[in-house]
Amino acid sequence: MEATELLSSVRVVPQDSFLIREATLADLPLIVAQRQRMYTDMGHSDHERLDAMAEAFTEWLRERLEDGRYHNWLVEDSAGRLAAGAGLWLVEWPPQMMDFSPLRGYIMNVYTEPGFRCRGLARALVQTILGWCAAHDIHTVNLHASPDGRSVYESLGFAPTNELRLHI
Image 1 (spheres, rainbow, N blue to C red):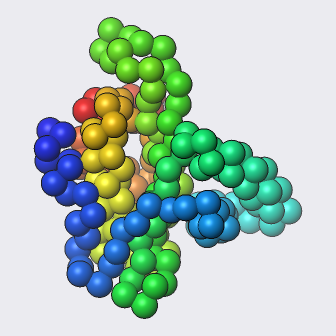
Image 2 (image 1 turned 90 degrees about the vertical axis):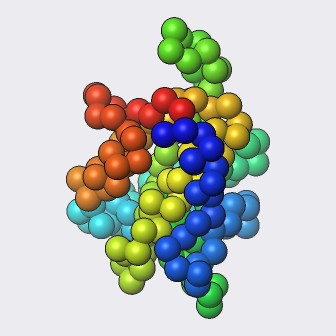
């Protein structure tokens, strides 16, 4: 997929009643709550462990949001309700033959609230992230996909390996 295609798709969502915006530090509790619901939807039901994960993730996330190593985008409906979110962790990486960039993108925390699913919001978020990566010279993007999300990522050009990767 060409960078111009990715950039032209930024902030395009299937219905005009949705807005994609970059999260701020004030959104930290929303991002953490979505991560907990993501794990719950994947079948994790140990609430003590989920709460401990949320506490540890809050500290990890706060540091990275503050210093720019993590970016998150949120989708809101016209009433301002949170519909979906997705994050990008910028990971230091040594230059390699296929990519000399010192950073890789790692897409994580892709989550759509149950009442907003099957509207293309996760796809729009990932396209937004890929457009941001192209604009910031991040050439390799990885992620791990749930079985439900795998076809979305593959349709965007991610190739299965021992991890999913897209070279922009």
